[in-house]
Length: 296
Image 1 (tube, one colour):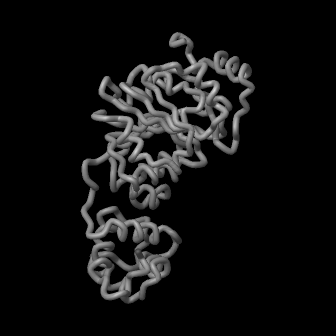
Image 2 (spheres, one colour):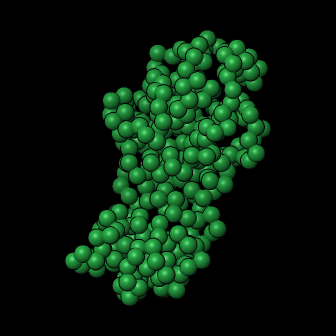
Image 3 (cartoon, one colour):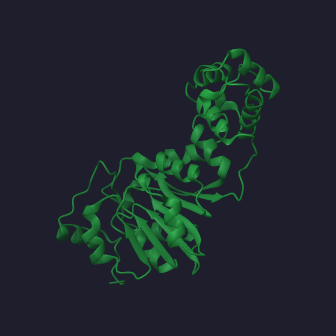
C-alpha cells in the first residue's frame, strides 16, 4: 500500500469514487495532487527520526502519507467523519493516529503531552481557507510546546501573516504572529495542484516559534487588547481607536500614548510591535483602582 501515490489524480479519483465520497464546500476541502509540493512542505518542516507531527485536517491523506514516512509519529486531527473508511483503506501506517474531532474544540496541549513524549513537535497542514485565521490564533494563543509550524494557506493570508508595518496587509494577526514567531513564505502554490481546484492561489508559510516572545510586556492580555482595538476601525487615529474600543477616557489614552512616545494622531497600522508594547505598558501603569477592570 505504501507504493500507491495518493496524490495521483487518477488514484485519488478512483478511491473517492469507490467510497462514494463527496467534497464538502462547507469544510473547504481541496486535496493536494502534486507530489513536488508535498515534498517541499516536508522539506520545509525539516522532519527526522525525532520529529512528532501534528497534522490539522489530513483530508484524503496525500500529505499524511509522506509525513508518516519522514517523522517518528504523526497525529492527525480530522473533522470529517466521512473520511474514516478511506483512511482505514489507504493510511495503514503504524506511526499514525487519526483523531476525528474539530481542531478548534480539541485540547491540543493535552494531546501533545500525551502523544509526543520527548519528541520535537511540529504542526504541518494544508489548512482550509475558511478557518485559517481561527486555527492560527488558537495555536499562538494556547502556546503549544512546538518548534515550528508549516502550513499551506491562501496566498493573501500568507501575505498578511508576514506583512510589514504600514502595508495594507498589516493587521492584528500579523502582530500576533510577530510576537511569537519568525515567518517565511517558502513558496507560492498555484491553484492547479488541488482537487477540486480553488479559485485562488496558495502559499506555504513557515513559522519558527521563538523560545520567548519577541518583546516583554507587563501584561500580555493588555497588549493584545490594545492591538485588536487599534485595528478595529483602521481609518481612526490610534487615540480614537483605543478610547472607543477599550471604553476608557480619552485623556488617559492620550497620556499613555504621549508617555510611550507615540503621536496620538497616527493610525495603528503604522505602528510596530515594539511600539504597541510600549503603549500597552503605559496603559498598564495607569491601571488604578477599578478603572481598567472592564479590560479583563
